[in-house]
Length: 269
Figure 1 (cartoon, one colour):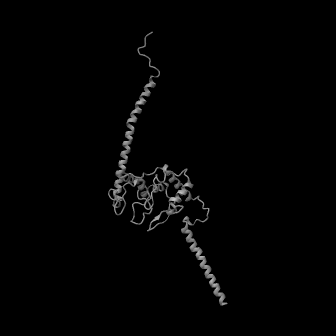
Figure 2: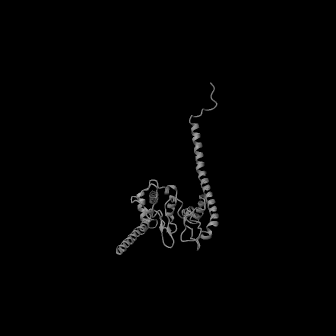
Figure 3: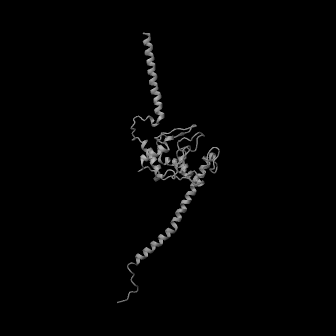
């Protein structure tokens, strides 16, 4: 028999070569892919900041200054964070139509993409609260009863115990929270817009904010029932006192007039 010209390969040799190739490929990917991904993210963020700066120069700089430093017509935006921009612009409060005691909510003038660009630019001026993720403000599984307790303790003085809103001094007001998106309620608590105090996570943890959002969603739901009967708009002492004055006092006046008329008639006869 002839001798074999070449040795037979071990049955596991192919497997070893394959594993080696995979290891080399994985190492190269680990070395280069994350860097490329980070570079792409940095580039996208830089583009967003640049576009946001252009939008800011056109729609915001006249009041807040060319570099966000503020002016006599608008406060400084350095350090307010992306969350404040998303709240103010998404709810239409900014840009202002005219100077006044308070910026009312109205139809947004910027798309969400443009709002994100503005937020990216303002965030680049100084560190501040970032735009919350859905997981942060999603009220699923939250404690509604605890949220009601927190809301009545921290918010009801201005917003009413069911979030219907109320009047403040010098033409200012606490807006109604009925129908407000959970994201914007969370951002308002984080940033403290206008007359409202801020509630950062060090003061009010994320879980408690979710509880409050869940409570507002429950009391303002179409399925919510009022055990006291007619709620009179849910405005509390204001509507109840007005009802008492108009109908209660009106009924007393009517009775008094009727008694006086009967008395006069009796004297004549």
